[in-house]
Length: 278
Image 1 (cartoon, rainbow, N blue to C red):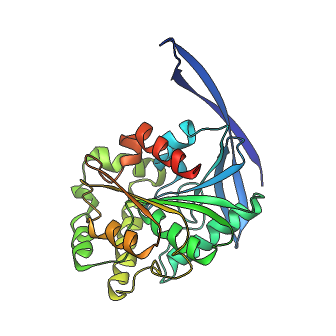
Image 2 (image 1 turned 90 degrees about the vertical axis):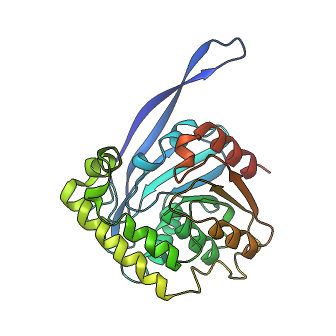
Image 3 (image 1 turned 90 degrees about the horizontal axis):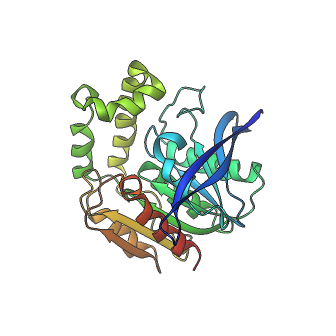
């Protein structure tokens, strides 16, 4: 597949309070994995590789701008990806079979192997956190560390009520719809979101969750971050994950909402970098 690159710059305050400009190159392209072409972006030259998992209908560019741009490029090699049917990993159109989280997990790990990484850490947000948990449980020998935030441990009755409350995107503000409509177009976004609500709601019939209490994942160093003002993920989810992943660490952000890694990017990035380098 063709490979492209682009460069971005960030302004960094130095000790004399002046600004200097730091340039970073991003390689982007597609790799054929498990029968589909998966889009990815890669930046940095550190020995510790990281894979970023976007949320529902999300992509590298909609969900991880501050992480691709600002995570330390000397310490880490950062890879973002668009799961099949999301963002620039289209075609195919996105669907939501019963195993869609497990399918994404396999795609993610196989993509990293195709890119030449034999061991790496996972950072997963929202649906991406669920996928990262499953990927880590299934591949303990290739995962260094795991960071998840805004992720469910299962689908409860309360979660179903929350999903149904946001099911009709015509009730969303224009500001909330705009990023997704720019990626998919209004009609495709509306249909894909409806399909997502139906797909994830099926897990309400499976109280056992996503295998997060598996003994495989119990000993993986894991950082669970939760915004205490998250309107989409009740606080019992991070508590459950913390209790069932032995040796995990739970960090609460009192003002954090669902997109805390975007709203508080500097604090989030430092927290993650410190954890990954322990």
